Amino acid sequence: MLQESEIIPYHLSPPAGERALVLAPHPDDETLGCGGAIRLLVESGKSVKVVFVTSGDRGDPEHPLSRIPGNSAIYNRSSWLSGEGITTGLSDENHLTGYASLREKEAVRALGVLGVSDYEFLRFPDRELHLHYKNVLDRVIAIAEEFMPDAMYSPSVIELNPDHRTTAGIALEVQRRKMAAGAYAAGRLMLVFYEVTTPLRPNMLVDITPVQNRKKKAMKKYKSQMRLIDFLTYIISLNTVRALTVKARYAEAFWRMEAPLSDKERERWLAFQQTL
Image (cartoon, rainbow, N blue to C red; front, side):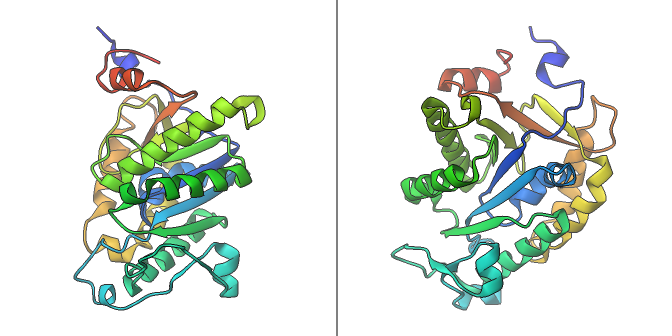
C-alpha cells in the first residue's frame, strides 16, 4: 500500500523550467491553474511564453458580444500592438465574436499583471479542439520548435472540460515526439500538468504564498468569467488545500512528467497504484 508521502509531496519545489511554454485551452486557464508558478518563473528571470489555444467563444452564449462578429486575426504581442494580424486558416471563423475578442483583451491584462510579455492566440473554436487535433498539434509543434522550451505546462488528462483534455493529449504527443527526436538539449522536454477544474495526483507542490496577491489580481482581470463562476473562491480554496502537507499558506499542485510515460503507466499513477 502506498504511504501518504508517495501520494502527495511533503516538500516544496521551485516551478519547473528555464524556458516554460504554457498551454491555455481558454483565456484564464493559465492564471487559474498556474498563475503563481508563472509569476515565480518571471521573477526568477526565466523565459515564459503563453499560448491560448481556443478563442473561448462559448464561455457565455448569452453575452451580448457573443452575437457580434470579432476580429478574424491571430495576434501575438507584437502584432497586437502593431495592429497586424495573421488569418487563422480555418474554413469557418464565425466563432470569432466580440466576446472572444473581449476574452483576449482580458488575457492580455492578466498576463500584464503576471509579467508575461510573450504570448500568442491560436483562436481555434471553443469546445471543438478534438475536431482540429492535427492542426492544433502542428501549430504547437511549430511554436515549440521556435521557442525551444525545456518545460511545457498543460491542463491534465483528467480535467472536466473536453478542450482541457485535448490540450493534454497534444502536450503528451509533443513531448513524445520531441524526446524521440532528441530535438532539445539532452533530449529533455518536461511535461507539467496543472489543475483547474479537477484535482490531480501531484508530484510537485510550489509555494505561491509570496505571489498569491499577484495571482488574485490577475484572476480579477477576467471579469467576464468571474461573473459566471466565482473562480476566486474556488481557486484560492484549492491553493489553500494544496498547502496541507507543506509549510506554506498557498500552493499550486502539478504532475511533473520528466519523460514520456506509456498509457498503462499513466493509468497506474492516476489510480494510485505506483510511484514515479
